[in-house]
Image 1 (cartoon, rainbow, N blue to C red):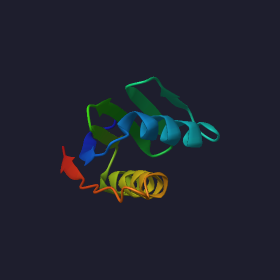
Image 2 (image 1 turned 180 degrees about the horizontal axis):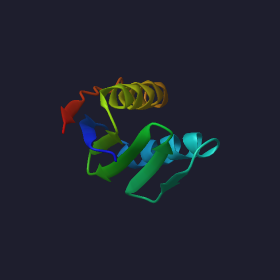
Image 3 (image 1 turned 60 degrees about the horizontal axis):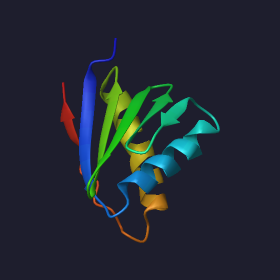
Image 4 (image 1 turned 135 degrees about the vertical axis):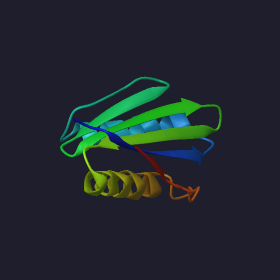
Length: 97
């Protein structure tokens, strides 16, 4: 049962573009679905949910334990930083649960 979550709100001019890029990238190897305003990426260690609103990308990762959350935060942070390198996004995770 997954019970731990972590959230980040990332200011960006292109939240929709990053949802599409992240989901398309991961969809080559793992289940990932998306539309214009949201996405879900299903990792072995948990799930990442993405939402776009105005100039903000909302990220949420959910996993079974602190180790899974740390791994999910790291994977999502590294990939978003790579895709959004021109903007140098600030990704501050806040853990809950």
